[in-house]
Amino acid sequence: MSMVSFFHNLTNNLINYMQIFGPWFGFLIVFLESIFPWLPLCVFIALNIASYGNIWGFLISLIATILGCVCSYTFFKYLFGNKLAKLIKKANYKKIKRVVDSIEKIDFSNLVLLISLPFAPAFLINIACGIAKVNFKKFFLALLIGKIVIVYFWGFIGTSLLESITDATTVILVCLLLIGAFIISKIVVKKFNIE
Image (cartoon, rainbow, N blue to C red):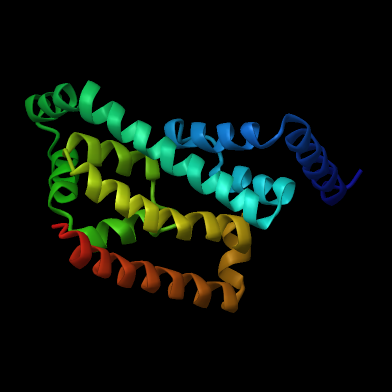
């Protein structure tokens, strides 16, 4: 059996299992990825799109990743934020402190842009926003805008870096989406008076 047919069979089997277990399973795996970063978000979103269609797969993935990020942010903000901040200060982790300080001072548009980047470590962004005590409204609105780009990128553009970079149309589309997310974030800043 060739490698191509192996992956083709594997993909078909995974899609069959996703359809058997239903949309809640698709929701759960994307939700868990936001909390456990070693899970492959790109694969889960692509499977959701393939299993449940473009619209439902997209919506399931979008809602799941936003809720997962909110849970991660809340967990670190209210349960471990103070302890971790004290530990960073006490242990004199200058690099980590610099990251937390810059996240604390990041403006809304740049936070949206950071969340929108397909290869940015979402889990670390959630933790840093929680520890830095970034305002929940600012974090949530940035997620709403930024995660649309991520889910679109992984769901409709492809699941591998190579495919995405070698296709000029894809690169242009992603750049346009990032610019669009940045412009929308500027509008949201004015409308909701977010700093």
